[in-house]
Amino acid sequence: MGEPILLVSVSARMLAELGVRAGHDVVALDRFGDLDLQRLCQSVSVLRDLGGRGGMAALVDAAEEIPAPSVIYGAGLENQPGLVARLASGRRLLGCQRETLERVRDPAVLGASLRAAGLAYPLTFGARDAPRRAERSRRWLRKPVRGGGGRGVREWRGGALDREVIVQEHISGLACSAAAVADGRSAIVLGLSEQLIGHRGLGARGYAWCGNLVPPRLGEAQRRALAAAARPICAHLALAFGLRGLFGVDLVWDAERAWVVEVNPRPTGSLECVEAAQEVGVFDAHLEGCGGRLPSIAPAPTPRRAAGKAILFATTDVRVGDTRGWPARGIRDVPHPRERIAAGHPICTLVSIQKSPDAVLAELEARASALRAELRDCAGIRAPA
Image (tube, rainbow, N blue to C red; front, side, top):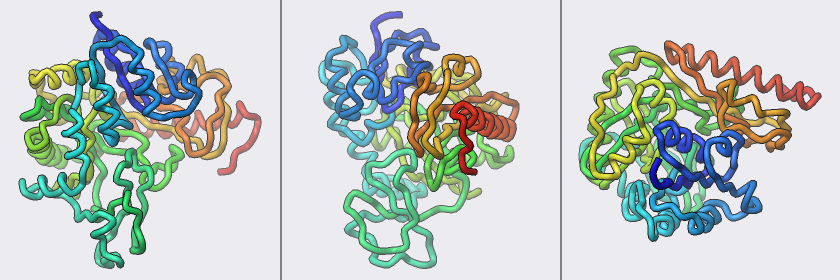
């Protein structure tokens, strides 16, 4: 397999699964240390190995003790360029450098770059520049500067703002994302997904991200139009910011334009769906992009099959039963037997491959409902509806 690659992320299971499937030796560091991650590869987790404290900084501390010559970072580190720099010290960083993160994650810099290129970006204000009263003809969102996954996003109708937030115009349309790979100069779009946001059947609320469908639930003409809009966006970002490897762009498709909402300069949560639906090897594509080469792949605008994932959230405190058989049932990010999960936290991830995104979503919703009922039976209580 060659030398091990270190993976550091809030949740590293997906990256580890993609890497192992591609034939690589990986060592994973994350928060949860889920059952299926521990079965996949050597791992270290905050909750199970590091006393449950310290967050991403504790993982970076632990990484310094692991002899791996290369490192890939995932979710949770794009907002902490200083920790990324520490991870890269003495190792080959397979991803974007600190300076790139600081620029592309700055809403003012990102917005100015996109607008100068004639690309759509919503009106966005820092806390200091936001109007005291929200313009009534528009809808506005209050978002953490260093947020992720929709956490902390709220409607905003005016009032005082913490300096660690921005105010952004709410764009009506379909929440989507483009998964792409860059070589520092250009980019290839590997796949497009519809984002599942605040889906109550999955226990999510508000603007919380809770999964993806590949391809989006759009007609053929709209899918092609969205793909045509996403390609120049990803190409511009790669050149303007020097992006390398896998990255994601959160978009809102209003049936005419693709509005860029956020750029995630690291492997994103939709990738296992993109790999399954588009039949492309995303992990090796990342390695090629980081090496300064675009992979020689051309994903189809409409894949032959659809794939999706759904994160199931606890709506009340739950304690799971015997979860050792869950991976064989298409369940990922599996908690350990008898683990307690607090309300509002993720229980697990469900994955599905079907003929259409509508069929994928229907199966995911049915399985989520069945699993929630199973957990209620396991606990011997009846949870509120």
